[in-house]
Length: 130
Image (tube, rainbow, N blue to C red; front, side, top):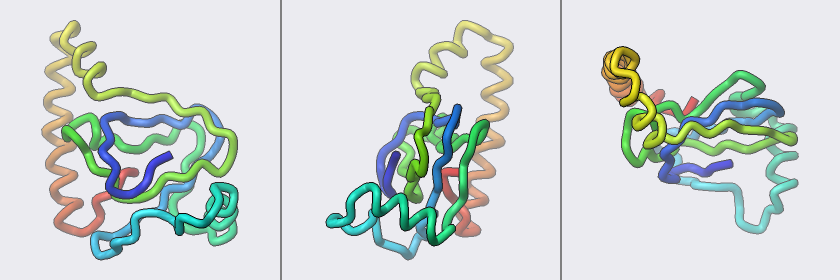
């Protein structure tokens, strides 16, 4: 679905299926699996190692992309089954909110809180996409 260091401007919701998120710490410079590996090998490896965080129906990822322009992903997201994702684009979300002034203010307050949480997570080395 995405690799580390990709520019992302959407929040994703899992509608069906499952994915695995593999977090790469700030000192891990690997960006993807080896280029010679086929996608099926990568999925099998992710399933067999039982590494990362599993995301199923009703889970989401990349929320920071709603609050930070040009969010850079911090890990890799791999679909391990047929998966349907819902995509909430940051620009469209912002434009939609402008038509609902009361909700817009609530989201502004939430975004300030979320941004503070992201800063704290970055200081603790726990900043990720999930």
